[in-house]
Length: 442
Image 1 (cartoon, rainbow, N blue to C red):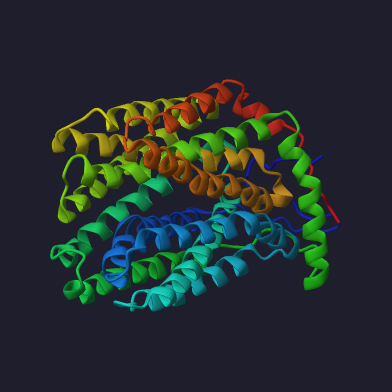
Image 2 (image 1 turned 45 degrees about the horizontal axis):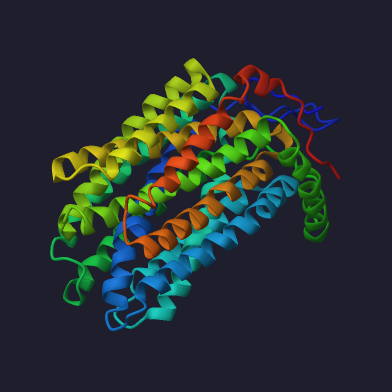
């Protein structure tokens, strides 16, 4: 049976007496810094700037701009969902999480710089560049998460994940404040050069935030083979043998199912925040930036607070609290009418968003076998990508049929309710840590 090491590092291979040394403070700080670039990228490139820039400037003379944007999002998210488990398994078999991480990181930077220079009429080129950027960013983010249980003890997984997420959201908040003056003139063709500069600044921040990890993170996994074709075969077998762990009754299946439901509900709410602010509250472009600042501020507080709560109360109670916050914010979202109350609701949405990821990332560290970190994080990553694709799709279909925000908002409420019920069956952290999980070995 796979045994967990309380130092947070994988056990050495049979016959090898050299045990990797525990991570120090500088290595944990380097890992946390990556969240600055990750949060900034998600907020500016996906949630606000490039999304609006694509629809209003790049596709200025097209009537199908929104459909094209959802198309490229769906394609890139689906590709990541299907390929992440194999990428993770390959990283474990080859003992190359760090090498693969920074390959994806480099591709993301290069394609992101190309993306930042797209202008009016560059529709298909920008779609291809965005797909490559989003896919490589997602791979890097997932592989980086796999380092978490290797660099800290199981008693402080939530604390480190929460600190890193809070650190990242503070960086994202600073990034938004930095690029906000470039967006004051709106998302227009005449302001395209300023928007391109905002995108370039964000890519530069992402690149700089990854440098400490590039220099200080250490590879602790033992390579099973150095042959690429053998690695493909071993990775495929390991994936096939790990699927029963996810399907059979137990903590892993409970957590994955809850992650899928809560992730779908959370994605719907995050999508609705910007749309509802504009259509129902009457927010202007510059006020949309304030909405995202409120979301990021809430995410900073949520990630830090719930990370500590997770280590204090345990995973199940912490996740239940997060889902409760999401439920309250979902109800408030369609009830408030004034801008100040909406900004307060956006802060609550951010609180739930920051804490959900940081706590879930730490819980996955308890559930993943020490010899297959990246593989199991890759499997968990599928739930997030499927949720990101399915949740907004269901909301959009129901909104199109009813032309109302209130009725489609029952989708996240149902998702959160079911996710909460599943979390009631999640055992205490010590039982999760002690649960026997043996990854498929070649």
